[in-house]
Image (cartoon, rainbow, N blue to C red; front, side):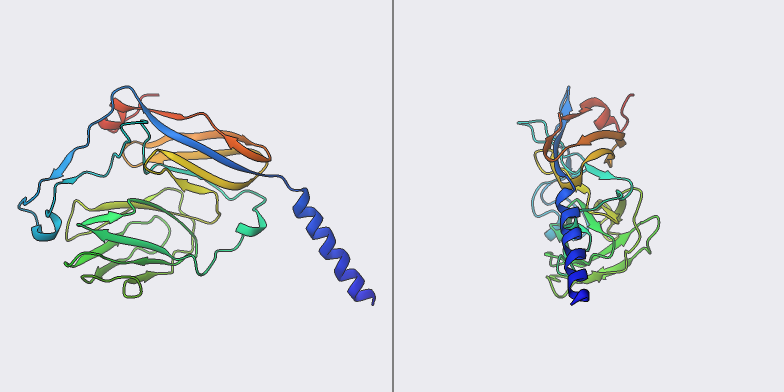
Length: 257
């Protein structure tokens, strides 16, 4: 009887601790100010590139700078905590083994172009193309892979990456050696508090512990947009004002401080 009562008390205290903790959701947007760089043609339809029947079936534009012309939102920006906070929401502590990430290749371009994965999470590299690719990663801490991806390797028949168990300090490049223009970026973190901006430049990071947090804001063309993006999270919704990036500096690959 005493053992049952003790178990009940411990469970109640744990429940009260979770209920007492405040959690907040961070939302924001990265926008380009000043001149908006125009989309840049990578190669035109029918261009003399390797596997042109697939890779140059249509006009292909560079994907290193993707901006929504209507709202100036900048896509593919990483926003993340450099280190896991002391408290992590109970629902997010463990990596869901079923939450597999898919990394695809379509028209000889990687998709998604920028991706966040939890340490220990499974990533399956697949392809929608009728030509072969290879996927070559360049992590700082985890073991690199350099593997052949066969034509039309759809889900269940791709290459499974399940050995990325260490957190990376920066996003790292992923390339195809067969088609050298193909490049994407992965970020592996050991916590759930990281995101990539969408086509509108927007991001959401839910269930952060209340308090002060210092995020990194990083884009492949310029590196750190903000290395110390400080946010005070309160319980509930936390909408930050837009993070601005100079358009000329973005195109030049160097932001002025």
